[in-house]
Length: 208
Length: 286
Length: 138
Image (cartoon, rainbow over all chains, first blue to last red; front, side, top):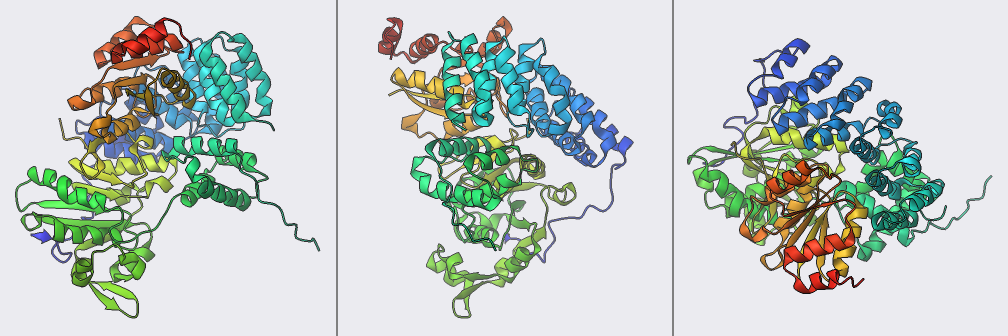
């Protein structure tokens, strides 16, 4: 007993033979196995196979295990690209906060693929979808983020969408954003939080 | 020939500092308050000059928007202390022998195996510190078969760890009796750790982002992953946290560096508070 | 002195709520998602546990409902009333909040008076409730 000496037996066993298939159809089939560990490994292995995007995305809504979900999202993030974006956008409407947040996290890491969809999302009839889109912009590395947010301040009718946009603008706003801030101040002049948030964002943006 | 122009270093205003502090806290969980101005301003200026940015604003825009996110990694590196030495952040080792191992052992039959994974191994100070703690400070060490696994992506440091030679600085926090018991003097001012201890750690080269590497690790009861994930980009961090979660036995424990937090990485782990430390736990199966 | 933990992913909202609650005379701390909030909860020494939680529903990593459910599993000393703050005004969301273990539900942006009164009532702070209700501005 005590500290096991290296010579006794190696702790790390190299897995030579594979119990399960590593090809695309085989791995996709494993996404529905009863054993969560099998599903998790399949989700992880599929990160290397671009053809896996539809299957990975489809599995998300049915997957009850958080660690498998996490592996599905991470693999989609690693695969990236337009098909990942289009398959995850519907999750912005999900009632499940885990699915929604997981989708937002992946989408915010795919700036070029997500950019063509932003304007439509910011005009969605559902104010929650517009809020989640603004949340996504909070981590998006794209040159147009400040512009998109300015549009929200100028046009969005919903106070909480504007509030979320102000949060992000405090970080990414420039002096070019100031006119939009002034416009929002006029539109929501009787809301104490919005007034506070505008003052804060204006102070953070500072002079040029 | 252009005369070298001596430019005044860029100024960091109060507003700049707050902007940096808020962003850094949001991304890493690390707070810098006014008392750290000198420390922070100096390093911000270094990053601004290093990247050739005109001023703080321009540098911050690059930090926030550049596609590869490399500047964030440079920034985290410069804002955190990266030293390794024996018994660093030892309160977590106290927690290991005072609480974590007892809980784990309670779920196992005497004689069974307990696995501890230390990653990154760096030059070995952490896994060897764990070994010393187990031998000296865990009452039940003789009742269980404890394996210490330790990994790093860098084969140079792995070789150094297996060589086991350390500087005065590295052993400075070791109680004298342990130094005497487990080390011999080496040359003028270095120390060589005992071969028995080196043999008790299984070293391996591992890239935490590579499933082929991490899949070999199974049934891990305790992971020390200190001051590593904070240097990863957002996605790699999530991938690594998830891979390590998968390698753990249910009920296993994870220790991050004292200024790191799962709140920026993963919601899979449960928070556990012990008298010596706060750690994370993989839930026991329902 | 009562201690309140303000939990919201937006720094501006945290600042706003902390100002309102601080002006009413209470000590505040903050966290930006449910995981960080649980870490703060666990980090509190016995003589400094939180007396009230003001929790945003929609946060990344761990949302407000999940935080409250996890909170309610902890020791008695961590239990305290929860005010949930949400952009939703639908009745099923208030129901979800109560099912998770919250005590009170406010719709964002929270009106300062509503926030202070809810907090004062849940804290049993009569003085603060009277002061807020009498419309004395801080």
